[in-house]
Amino acid sequence: MAAYLILLSLFLSSVFTLTSQNQHHEIAEAKLKIARLESVLEESLQKLNARSNYLKERDNLIDELAIKIQDLLSLLSNIKHDLITNRGKGCCIRRRGTTAMGCFQTEQF
Image (cartoon, rainbow, N blue to C red; front, top):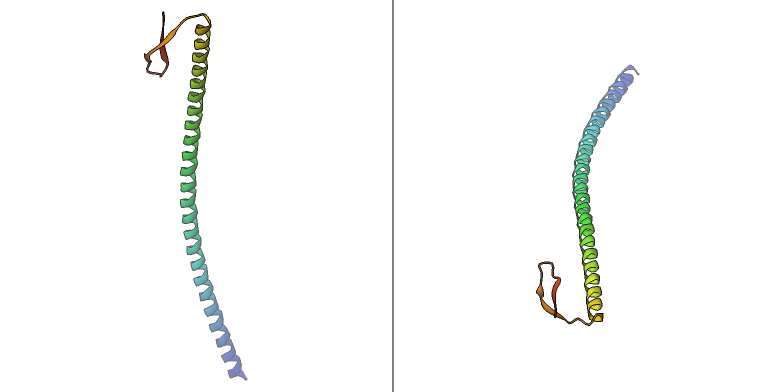
């Protein structure tokens, strides 16, 4: 009976030792996996920030172009108004060329 108790205690001791070693191994693997996931997360955040900055730049460019388009539409409206007004006064307008902005220079005669 005493031999049985000694064998049982040796067996349980070795089982607990193996279990403890296994737990340490699993903990080490879990820490490594967490480190990899943190690295992937950091890389993903950097890519996301880069894309966000790109989109902000594009939005700013779109806003600038919208202002330019509005200015050009306003200029076109003014040109049309001037043409209608000058024709209504009986003046003849002849196309002579264009300026750097693409506006017609007119000559009255």
